[in-house]
Amino acid sequence: MNNHNLRMSRHPSPAAPYGGAITDVAGIEVGHFTDSRRPTGCTVILAREGAVAGVDVRGAAPGTRETDLLAPGNFVQQIHAVMLAGGSAWGLAAADGVTRWLEERGVGLDVRYGTLPLVPSAVLFDLPVGDARIRPDAGAGYAACEAASSTAPAEGNVGAGSGALVGKLFGVHRAMKGGVGTASVTVNGVTVGALIACNALGDVVDPDTGRVVAGARTEDGKTLLDTRRALLSGHLPTPLLAGTNTTLGVVATDAALTKVQANRLATAAHDGLARAINPVHTMSDGDTLFALATGRVPLQGDAPGMTVLGALAAEVVARATLRAVHAARSVRTEDAYFPCAADLD
Image (cartoon, rainbow, N blue to C red; front, side, top):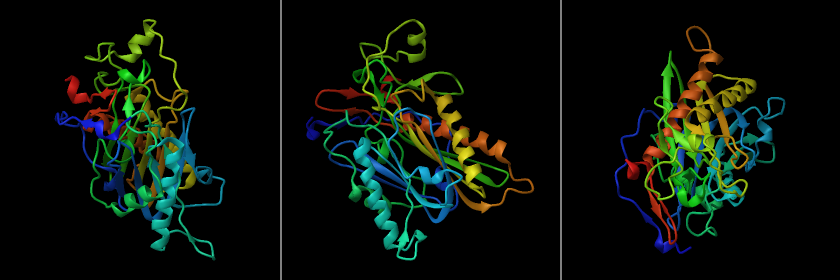
């Protein structure tokens, strides 16, 4: 594919629902790198002072790095960043740039012979959009860190969501544009936020109304098919290459959690994906959610406990997923067109 044939729609997207951002959580910063040569990129979620972390991988085709260290029984207690990227497994190289950037600033675990930043990472498959030979690398990860701040991050066709698509169960040619979304809620002094890069095989659904917002289109490409109803009526999916999808995300809270609790938070957060994506956690998705706890607020007194935190995590994940497709813009390549939610309104 020729990069110079990429065109992005100027059609305004509908107003994104909900509000807030993962950076509303004290101690969290976000930076994007978006490649100008084709829609791909990476997103870094920084916790410079360290954060207790967990992870839950639900898709059957994940691409990850350093997730084993987040198991509750393993030695490491805190990490310093999470990197999300496009480019499939090649995109994991972006984590090297994040590690270098943090090391230069003295952020990491003291291992006597150096300061070692811990950067668990995950990737999604965005190779159908533009020239697949262009993938995020260490320079991209470094640039994302340089752009990081505690202000609300950009959404839509940015960072890890630059080349994201949704609704590919009946062929990539009937898919729509996905992207990055973020949201947060605060209850009794505790904030929970999420950032999602939505590149799902399934449709994205508004959990409050049940309406499909973006996903597989009808054969003429003009309207939404509704994948769930199509499957129930006997429509057969198009044969798929395994691992060509994946929704990634990070849930963060300022609550003080243990590693066991952080892992449970990541597990509960997947309920939000299940509310907003259908089907989800498929054999062709590598759906992975990380949880970060910056520990600014102790869980005592009127602060919400783990049951409430789990409910909040699921809620912000669902909201961020919905925002990802509302904020997305359409993309045209040399041989394909991927509309956004606004184009079908």
